[in-house]
Length: 118
Ligand code: AMP
Image (cartoon, rainbow, N blue to C red; front, side, top):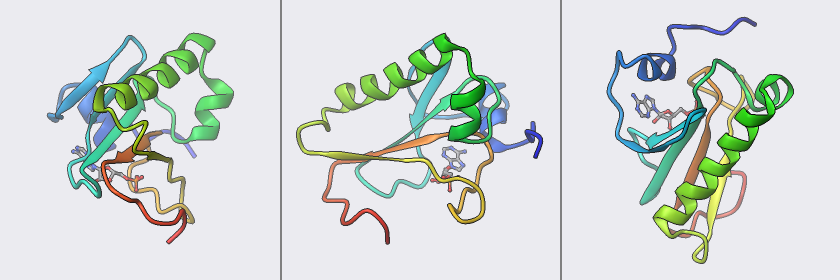
């Protein structure tokens, strides 16, 4: 599979589509999900093109990996969801029901999220 440059998140990164930005750093962007499934539902994406968690973890430079993980943590801190609890989800490909083929982590919190797989 090759990266699809026309996916929605690529367009957001190029400034062709708007987003509700929450935080960013040199290598990653966090913005509100357009169809939130919880009171806090934020997507964290790398700024460079990767389709999935495994492609990102295997191909990204060390500083990208660090910056991405730091931004996830900063989102959790900013939204104060650590103590109440939260969930990170990264859907991948068909079985994972991935809709947007640009790697992203969903940060969900602000309510009881139920059991892990449903
Ligand atoms: P996934 O199934 O993990 O690929 O989920 C993609 C997520 O992107 C869904 O939760 C959508 O609601 C969200 N989404 C799609 N388009 C946008 C957009 N323009 N801005 C913010 N979130 C979006």
